[in-house]
Image 1: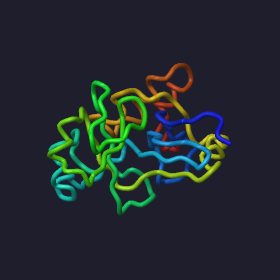
Image 2: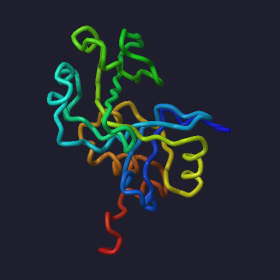
Image 3: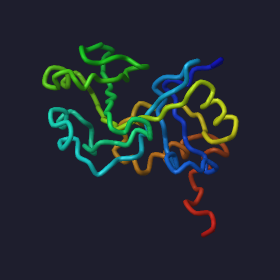
Length: 185
């Protein structure tokens, strides 16, 4: 049984996490309950421009305007997250937490995109079955930290892992200086 929902929090890969799908990843948890968890990797931009795959949405996304690799699950599908300033609930958007929600990519972008403050599109997602994430946390694979409003739409996603760790207190901030390959140290 899930004691505390991690929805809205960040999972930051520890240096001990050896799965190449999540090396130095920052995952925004979109849902976490007894059925499992799912989220999106915030710091894996792809070279694929949104205009090339979802033309109508290309003007609505936050820079960089590329598709992000949300995780290793269902990479042939897309999902989008967007912020809605002012607490509204526009058509084609479902609140996940705070002012952040999921976008219905089947909705006509010209009708709903103007309501969004920021938006990002992901190919695939990260998913865990019941108890799987809890086991990974127990094994020391992830740091769980609070998300900040700009994390989901960072203009410099490649530096997000270090930036999120650097703003933590105590020893966790020191992990931001961990070398990519400790053997070179």
